[in-house]
Image 1 (spheres, each protein chain N blue to C red):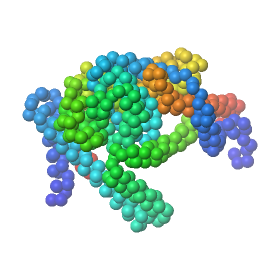
Image 2: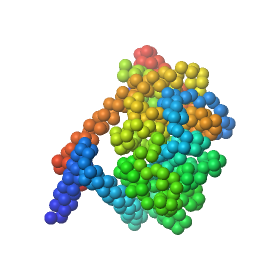
Image 3: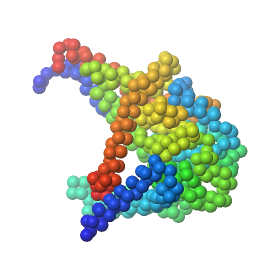
Image 4: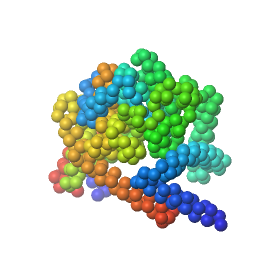
Length: 211
Length: 282
């Protein structure tokens, strides 16, 4: 019975609602449009609860790591302490003083933004090493990769475009006629896969939505 | 192979990571210590963005979806602030929405930096920030149909029936364009599905980090986005257009110099690879 409640009922709900929304997209009927608007509202409500659930799960995870850190990484509890402390500091200031307060905005802009920027900035070193090792003209495909990569790379460097102005047009050409079609193939592939997954979900062959 | 002496090609193919890190760091620091002020190239997508933003009639309304935070914010903050400055200078009303919770502080920072009072625009009359509205694509679709049904208050907690601008705008019919600062390589899909698919007559102008350009370009070529600003280079073009190079222009200097070690290493890698290959060693 528990399995039925956990899997079958949600699957039926998803199937019916998804099918109605799909029909509504193609057939303009007032009751269907009203149903869609109602579902959009409920979607927002559920989304909020999911966000709350995520926060609760995060607290639970880090609390367990503090009480019982992994045996291979006993210092992991200190990272979890910092994570939980940061969570409550942000929560306290956001709730106490206000999310639109200068204090909250300043705290966010002075901690989160620099931290994530540093994290991604460190990638520059690793991506430089990756490019150094990968972009070697060992065959035709590698040559094509190098030409395409360099054309975009040099276009993004204003100093190159200042020294050699046609570089902007060359880079734009590669972007528009080479990388654009390649990107389109990727987007189309992802879209087709999404259609297949959605249809499989509606006919209840795809259970990943509930498991 | 043990004990075989390394040739110069072997050494060039094995540059240590710490040397690369030091070189990158030095090149990054130079423009911070001494800004270079290099000219900013304007690519076609950025040129189209600027062309289309000029077509928005003064006094009309624009809906601005803001998703960016974190490191991506640094890439587009110049474009965000310069776009706001341009819109306000033309007395174009702006309704801003944060699509994700962590886009709220960055949006507030950006609005403050753009300094609306300088353009004589007032909150509630010429621009309004609805704050974070959860739901992502659900929210994007909901705002297209009716703002008043999707939200009841703005980010200050003011009921929307007390906000003058929101008495004039409610749905897609009231907007001349939408502007999107999106965060990931697939985020733009929801605006294409929910706005372009149903109302292609409403132009969409995008801005995003340069890493997302590969997936963005096909939408621009297809006409779904009339133009876009990609990373600091694109955003610097918008700053130069309004005559106030600043946030993005500084980053393009750093981008210039930080790319030099990469180019040098690519050249070294290929020279050493072919040198070793042609000298007979594998």
